[in-house]
Every structure is written in structure tokens, then in C-alpha cells.
Image 1 (cartoon, rainbow, N blue to C red):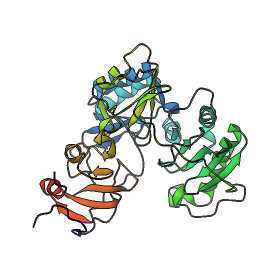
Image 2: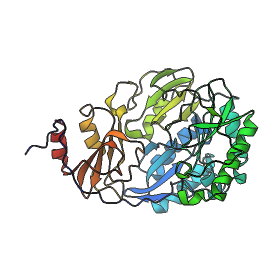
Image 3: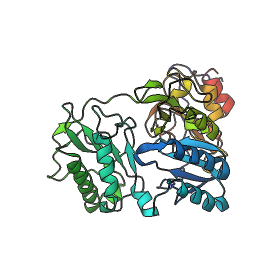
Image 4: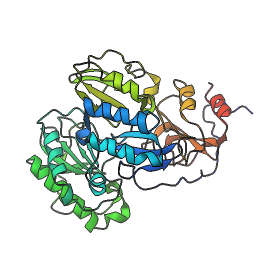
Length: 391
């Protein structure tokens, strides 16, 4: 019987093989082993790199790794394919470029996502700077917990992974909000916002939050000194590709590009640097908006509606190839598509209309869910999967 999709037809299967969740993210001090070598993740302060630092990063990616650079869904930059005996050399080169925290403890604490279109001197920059100065005041939190500093007129990071947020109300008042709560606590200054963030982090630990792991999962009522009094302003959409008041926004297919492509993106003399985003696109400060070979600049590009992890053989947990399949399916699957090499779903945490998941060398389908959801269709080969979608 043909597996081509028919209205209402589902081929039910059992649960997928469970992937090993490591519970932490790689850094420079603590890289993570993968199928193609070590992953080394750089966390740019303020989500920004000036031109010199970006070029140094590109040089390091070629010298010590595969030459591929990735933007992660936490707004960080990742180098792939670093050999274990090459890591000390990479570390030294990144240190010379000012891209390494002084200690591994500082790197672990500096898990701060910043709205990418902040302006010098605005409240987003002020709060981020104050929080960076007080990292030692934070308790030891679970490795994946973090902060979103999003204090523009309307928030832009509401769908991204963070546990404690600074946003604004519709009338412009600063607001501190615990993730998972619809309302937050108004504060009257950047200093007060940082005080409350640190206080919330300590309350999370003291009230047993470490067992829950994330703020959204911690179901205790907030303490009385964190009144949930106001809602954030209506959120805005992620930065669109193309011209921007600060330069131009470009996308990376599956969040990955060769180092030389990023070098070309900042080659013009008027470009001063970049801002990273959690949407696998970046803002090039001072850019004219002219197309750059190897980067996405069309908001209608089908690749923008697809998330795909590196897959096999690049990831040791993936059992299937992902990105070539994602390119094949681009434009043939309605809604957003997530292609994941295993049930961890690293490329996307939010549900999608269609999620293709690797399972013991074959593919399963989860509709309107995440990679770790119960499959609606299972046991498909790559060719059967393409037949299912009529490709």
C-alpha cells in the first residue's frame, strides 16, 4: 500500500528510542564531543561581535575545526569538528581574541540572551551590563537556565528559551517576569530589575527549583515580594531578512555557514560587526543589504520554515541524515517543518506542524508536536517518507 499522505490517514507506531540528554550546553571551557569532533560554543557578550572578533573566530574555525560556523537557537556561535588535541590551541586563539570568559564558572553563569537590535545606552544594554557585573551574586543554577533581556518597546524573545525575563509593559514600564507566568512585576529602574532577577534566582534554588530544572516547570506560587501585577506589551515578530535601521539581516540555511561566507558578509569597510539572534539569522551592523552569496536574504525562502539538526554522522546520537532530506522536503510540507536526527530535538524546542524524527535508522512523524512526542507515523525509510509527502 502506498504511504502517500491522505486526509485523516495516520500510521500509528510505538514510542521512539530515547536519546541521551546531557543536561548542559557546550562552551569554550567545556566543549562537547559529537560525531564529527568537539563542539565549541562561544557566547558573545551582549549578543554582539565586532568585525575583528568575528574575523578571528572565522580564522579559528578553519584552523582548528571543520571551517563551519553555526548560530544556535540560544543566540550563540558554535564551531564544529574540533579535534581533542586541537582544543588547547583553539582555546588560546580565542583567548587572544577576547572571546573566552576568565573561568569556566563565569562562562556557565553568563547565560544571557539579549534582544539583538538593542541600541547603545538603551535599557536593554544597561540591564545586561549591570547583570554581567553581578554574575557572582547569582546562585548556582541548572546549566540550561538563563536570562532574556528584552526591554525594548515590545518584546521579541518571548518564544525563546529563558527562565527569567526583563520586558516592558505597553506604557513602557520595566517588568520582570518569571518564565511560564503571563504577568510580571513592574520595577522602576534597570538596577531594580537586576536586583529582582537575582532575588528570583535565589528563590528558585531555595524553594526546591533545582529538582524541577527550569522555571517554567517549577509550580510553586511566586513569593509575595514578586507581585504578578502587569502584562508585557504585545510581542513583535523576529527580525525580518533585508534592510534594517542598523544595517541588514541575513539568514543561514539550517543555521550553518562556512567561515568564508561570514567573512564576505562583513567585508565592506562600513560594516562594524554583527549581532546574533536565536532565529538562525544575524544583523550585520552597517551593511547595505546587498545579497551575500551563501546567505539567505529572501523572506519567502522555503529554508526559513525548516529547522534541521546536523544529523548523522555529525552527531553521535543521530541515526539518520537530516539536512539533505530537509532540503528535499523544502516547499513540499505545509507549515513549519522540523527534521531531527533523534528525539532530543536540539534544532527546535517548540512544537511544529510536522516533525520528522530519526529512530533506529528510520524516520517517524509527529504532527503538531515536538521531536520527543509520540509518533503518528513510524518506521519509514527516506524514500517512503518522500513518497508520503509526494516529493
